[in-house]
Length: 497
Image (cartoon, rainbow, N blue to C red; front, top):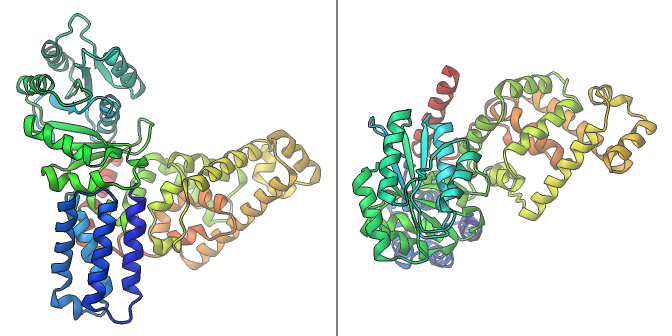
């Protein structure tokens, strides 16, 4: 997401960095380019204009020009303004002590309401210890209620069917009663949509809201519709009073105009973004982290959360011990690949790492698909080895390699290539250990990423990207403070569990 805008902004700011002495004329040129980049990203015209003027006012401050590196201060201003444009800070769903807390999901037909209802429910169960109950009040679209039941089963969340009724108000009353009787603390209402906004739809939503008094009314919109999504959100907000926005298909939106405009236009924040088809492919929306991604600063905090949530900590520590003691075998390498796949595609991971760590290297979706294929091929080769061969690769002679190549559908050359990559990775780990790079950030993440990155990128130095310094050293401490605090709380909570 934001690829187009990100590329243009990074180029513009890189040109500023290349100037020997920064002048107001240089900034004027940069701001014109930033304005054009925002408009091409389908950002609302007034929002783009106000953004540029705000950056101009702050960039013309005397403290900027008197600084040692004015271009860096301009980059910092752009970063701060981008984060503020999208809402400033993350907006979590706020729950009360009442039971159940009701969350209404509203939006136009086809925006992804039902799938988003399931995704958010699973996220709340996994991350906020909620016990959600789902109910569909879409009595108009054929099989809509059956669809929610399928989604609920997929995310292992309960659903209230209310088979005896086709009246939306009767359904929500029954769902609230069921939630109270069976101890569900959160009721997610998947409401009906239309192909267009009409008065009957709005009246029904107003009635449901009056009946259930929801703590959140989340508007679901397809991010790829750009300003149409913003305009629809504005109409829903005027009639129903939404409290937040869920943008779906953000992984397919290279522009990001809706995410950048919606907070300024309607005054309500984006709370979640859908980033894929799988039911765990949803993320809380962190404006500061998104601004970092757009400007090539990466998103290491989210990457750490991904690792903490999907990588077994005990296994990671054991693998880290083996790396630092030169006991890392092909068996461990295969296990690393399995863990690495849980984190998503290579292109997604690379976008979360700052350019300073990656040396500006980018991986396209096509290249990422090639990496995924290589991972499968690598696993097949290792699976064709005996346990002795996986634990001691030095026993692999020509006849054994021939057998392994035949068993995995590969060639002897591919088996040899894997062994060379494995040897290179082991050497790299030994060098890092001697150089003390398994401290700080590397130590936190090596268990989850070392083997996968090392094997997939072969002769490069991927783990060098993770060495030295903490995740937030290059960012503003204040803007990241709350995020780090949330991470620490989450870690303490997991230990107590």
